[in-house]
Length: 278
Image (cartoon, rainbow, N blue to C red; front, side):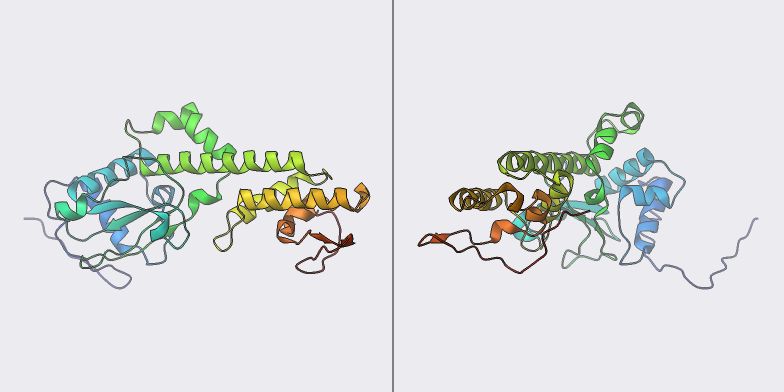
């Protein structure tokens, strides 16, 4: 009879044997759940991250996650803007040591709709769960990369038949980036001094994606129209009009452009030098 010994020194994970003894789970799903339960609390989760620390491909990891979802070990919820700190729709991945009942599992509705950006792992009260993760991986990806993932043949061949949270998330982020681009183009048509367009767009995109006090298209447009009217009313020469990059970078839509008694009453938030951003 063969025998074996376990040699445990340090840096190991303590977890229940439930999923390891569950005959309904494949070895791949058992291994993935064990790995996720052993990850540190501050680990930045994404499917690409799981692929990076294993020999499995993206499709294999997605299939294992799907198996864990169906078994109740992973529950995915959709959080609406009034439920998140970021004020946008986020997806919440909950990893459990034991399968959850139908009441909890029914919260797994992420495949029903595609929504906005954000992927995170958080704790649901009164249920045993080990780790909490948050990921901004896809927020950092640019439009060209997302387009390739969605339309490139090489990437498409790897995708499963059903949509996954990551694919839906990429679609939403791509749509959001296109929306920001279209908004900026509309604003740029109105701006009188069309210098520094590239940096102006970067500034507008950055301000739109801020978690605190993000730029809102209608407010920016209203401020820009007021600035154009101010320039016209004061007969300001074009060489004294701020470059587009400067105006957007300094959030000048928040300035006061009112004119009282024929006098210049423009007030800036703070004095800053007038120069073209590099």
